[in-house]
Image 1 (cartoon, one colour):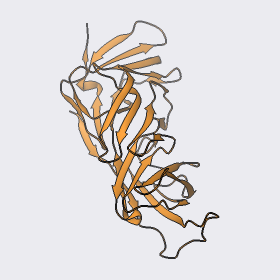
Image 2 (cartoon, one colour):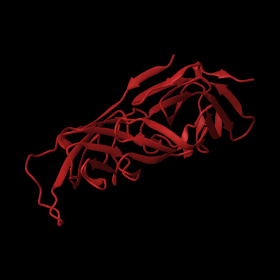
Image 3 (spheres, rainbow, N blue to C red):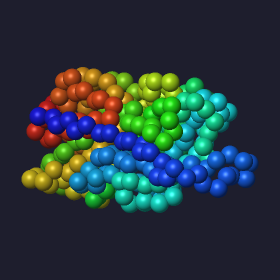
Image 4 (cartoon, rainbow, N blue to C red):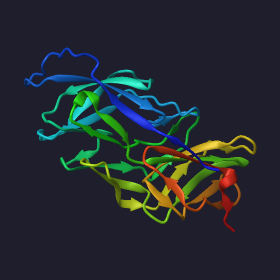
Length: 260
């Protein structure tokens, strides 16, 4: 049985009503507190979130020409963190993560990695895209525009790599609308390759693997497990596996069917 766990990320009110010192160009600085729930680019065995040193978000105002980047000020290693940046001009504000995504004022573009590396106890799943909008920059709410598939695999022996394959693009360059957060893959690949040369599957204890996926109902997901020695095995995931934006979908080895 698959288990679905909702995810939410909220952009909480500014920590203080007092304005910071103006930036050199005369614009006001803003301090924003962001709290993450059960998500982020680093997910441990207990799926607790944590912001990382150097994290940045971007906020676009409807009257500003370019996005304003907000830099992590404090809170690395915790689910709540403070970000600092120059408040953009506008009456409506759109926030997105990662800030490295390219923004033209209408859409923003980023990249879901086609090839990643598995590591325990924390599994790096790349930059989970986040988006939100609102009239008050101090009370924006942001949420994931993709879902996360967690595969709990059992077996025996060391791995070389595993491959998740779909009948549609699931990695590569993506585009998100600033107006409504609609997500689409462009110039994409139908696979996600996970290098796992230091990983050993256990017969009784499952090893989790995480995949950021576009929201959709998938009927053709396959996983290929390639051991360090021996023949590869291909498994079919359950029909109509639904991936929802901002949701963990969990599938175990017991849900997989070996493809002969």
